[in-house]
Image (cartoon, rainbow, N blue to C red):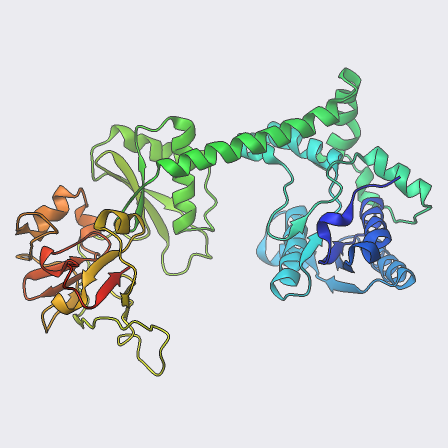
Length: 456
């Protein structure tokens, strides 16, 4: 009996997450049997959580002995998870999982392995689907156990019964976690009572739950892509149209929130609060939570601006004007050393952007799709500075009549909140470029341009 083909991992350094239980032992054995033929550099990792006392130490020693007998390098990481929970709070199981996956990601980030293989199987997927349905979730939650970022699951197509048959056929030793029989743990109850009841209703219940999870993942990816395509991008910001169907509106909002504050634990309630902005006038806002990992700000805001929802990490009725920075047209080779960031055309304030000389030129419309503007670097007068907008600023936009900068930004549907932060390149009250938005007609690229520049 062959559990899976390791051909997909050919030439890779694969580290197995080894607990000592039957699933992970079978996974390690199956990879060991195919490692030479597939040129796989095989290793194992055991995380000892310090949760089950002597039994936990027994499991660690079992893994050490097994790997020695099979000639497989083993890395052991010991973490006192109960101490972490006492110090920081939280759930013991969740904390243990966080420690395990932290160890997996460290291996990958430290380039000690190309892939980390876990022994999750079809029954685990079915249990996860039922658990999340009972707790409350959407289609995204039905994706259950996925492969991502170097974490692979070779056994997902196999049931627990098939894995047990493989272990018996190959006379594989393993250890049993005594807590697996305790049905006070929700997942154990689902495994021992709920899934068998479903199997009594239909013999292929587990298979159908796994198929449902795969279908949900496919449909979720499709809807997510559609939602992201509906996001409007203006002046470096991502905006969600208020007239999107709810299923796309929620996904688009979540995508934008995670762009600004990846650590936020966003919920349906947060999406509901944002949804209320649909019926409110432009300028209204709601505050959203962010995690402690998001340094530098404590709140993420969602604003109703026109027919869109826009997100921002900071909000102030008036913000201090940054100092003027001399404008220096960027050189062609931005990697040239020695050179200061300013000499290379890199600006960090009031918002990050670059200016450099280029050979390739796109039309203004094409360029803005790439969030860049093309200019004649020699057309900027001496004495230009980088700053934010001021009262009295004027601009003659590309192929358009002269007007105040305030009216120009209003016509472009750029809010006062955003326009206060946009960098402009100006001399006195004359604006020659609004970064990420538009250039003045006087600095456009023409047939006589010698140095074409890209503002991005």
